[in-house]
Length: 299
Image 1 (spheres, one colour):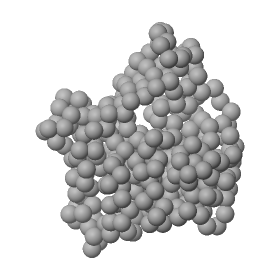
Image 2 (image 1 turned 135 degrees about the horizontal axis):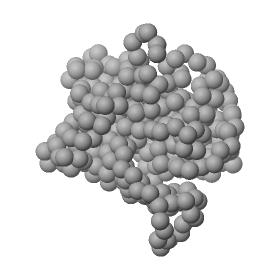
Image 3 (image 1 turned 90 degrees about the vertical axis):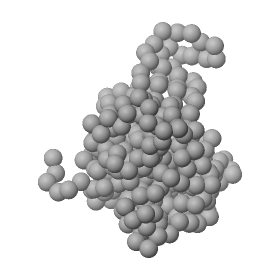
Image 4 (image 1 turned 180 degrees about the horizontal axis):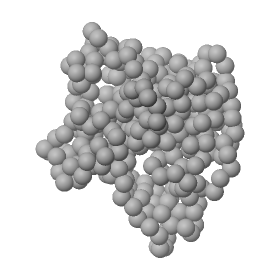
């Protein structure tokens, strides 16, 4: 354990229950096979926060959670994991969100993310950054912020221009390929570091890429302050105006995929918070992600 106070990182976005069905066999549409079904705290922002807590960071969550039994249980589970839940927006009218996925030996088969309550809550989840609790337009938050693309396009566009975020170290993930283009406002405003996979990079740049290095460089050229692009078992790349670095992930047997990208992003942020250089931070994040997908470490 370190003796100094942990680094505070704001995690803004989805906090919900993950319901994941996993089978050891290959699956296709219509498959009906034996397996295991788990229910765990999840959502991109929450996954990032839980991993940060494992690295002795102090994650503060800004999200929407219902005032229902599922919400009470979720808040208690998060608090027990070391997350700061004091600033969560809780609504009487909005139920706690849920994500449902099915995974086989051949990867993710299908998933549905019901984040309607987060979308309905909108800017209300950002109140602590605007009312002086954590920051304001006149005294912006100056720390690191992990932001996920489950927020609406309109709200993400507001954040990209919001003076309350003007001095933050923004780290941004799209949540899924289907939501990647929601992040274009950050390219236009030349704000933030993007964490995306090769498919998401292609969607943001409106072109296809053969490798992560080309994709990461293109994102920086389009306006990203920095871009980290992963490509499954192929090399991952970290691009900035100073150049591109690339590393090959470890070869492992993949036993789970949901949450892997969030785990990678959190591990990378934690490494940089500890003061490691770009090469070492990428090495650390790739190893943590490899351990996660192989099932060697719990989230």
